[in-house]
Image (tube, rainbow, N blue to C red; front, side, top):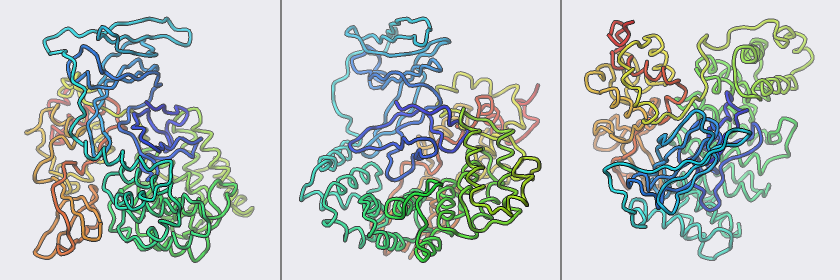
Length: 591
């Protein structure tokens, strides 16, 4: 149960407390300050489940508890700060797990410190710490469900995938003549944990045995992860070959996950195989021809419909010295609703050297003036802003500083972003957090706040509602006639639990090893047009003669965690707004 860093709240590198599956060779991106990794990095493994702000203190499995089966299988995590003991319910997903969380016990105050399942089958937990009253509690089950101990049998779901991952992990930490041939095909797996395990296995082998395979690879996932392995050799002579290999990719044709992994691979090549570090803590200046070639590949990705891809593409283009990205990034900031998203661009722009005009400089410093006076965050929030300001000044001439002295000092500013409530990560809401109060979604709600929450959660990007919005997902205009508040909440929090046949994504693997998941927009005798991004955008055309496998995915295209930036009352207002069909005269909004 991994800690957060509360000083980072309000900034894009804040990460909530989370449950991690610590497999062999695993990495979760803990670094100092701005160096922390987002969980989508290809050389990280991400979380089984994100929880929220808190202070982890204890973890225990439910094995041996005289509880119903569901709770014997659960993993329990303790949060000292908010006084919550969560039950984590794991579900096998490929070779690892995803999970849902349930507040099992909570209290005020209840500064939880540790827990154990006793020999009598009861759970015992303690509270205390930092001068607070200590205590020991015993938890037993009183009900009709069976508490018979479950047999110690491995879940059949994902069993083969887990066995494969463990086989790949058996090559970690040693050289083995069989490792490269066995592991290489799994670099192209659609299972992130298998790709990770395969890459680590290969990295332990003598590079001369696999470098040529990496440079000649054509299958996207294998190519990307093979070049990440190349970057991690730290052999600076390999940079031109590594970049040339990545440049074979058609980035606009890749899925969001593949685009993010490809951008990370480019970054690692420049970081590990490029020049020495500079004062701005980024890799040294890239070769001009190399930079131009990569910028030409990356530029079409910004702006895209994926904000995560936008973040990474903008950072890469700034590093490469693209002279158009500054103006595009400043313009993009005006459309962003969370302060974390806005902060990302203010942060990466601080080291940009090309493409500035006095108006763009004014906008950049105006955002920092706005954030410093009106936005809030953890203990380091304003320090990060001031550091970004100092770094930006290092890229300016004395003449620029003199011309823009008033805005640099905060004496004047221009409007850069929408005048809306800036949003931060609040909590990874689960059904058990909100179901007990769903009866409040039908009365005394706030229409305007519900509408604002609907927009902040980006629902309209994929769904039509009242005549407006996207078409990737079903029309939500009449959803109140079909869904109860609980059903609607479940479809938001657990989008993959029930996926309509009409909107179930199609999985396609080509003969060349490309892997796509998306909604079929058009199909004829020779080709399929697939929408791989839930927020819309260009369609990917796949020739049927190139298809090796085709099937229906059990995972919805709808992202999870969309309401993690909303407060509880905002979630209830949004449910009322959606069920009303955007009718402000609905009884749910009556005073």
